Image (cartoon, rainbow, N blue to C red; front, side):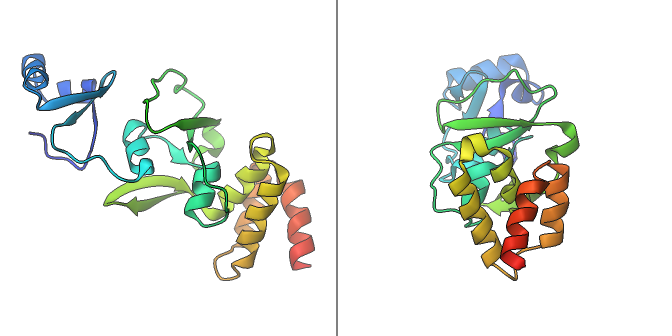
Length: 192
């Protein structure tokens, strides 16, 4: 058996570590269970309770964003119906979505993909998520998906946490993500 922290494996990853013959025998014996086209897990390995951990296994390059990030950072009362992730716009348009959990994908240019990304630990696994400042900016960046009321709710929750906010970083991100006009107006009204 492979020693790893990974919960799921792509067929190509498994074939890089064992022969095709051994792979087919493990599937036939039920030692490897197919959970989606081209994706397997070891029998008896527990699936994580947290959907974010599972999604990170499916999409290692993904960064959790929008409502998923806002909920993680306690910036919204909205409970996301789908796990929202951001993927790089170059080279990631062809993929297979799992049946569960439901996922909504956003794309970002290489220039802004890593802006505000951080690694956090969930259930003993490391996942990538946008920090609070990037999350606030993304709420305004995707107003057509989030709605102005929700974006303002997230902004107010962010500003209410005086110790946890970094207005300088927020403004820097707002410029790079082209939402400076929104963010600067709300900061000016809030801070004065």
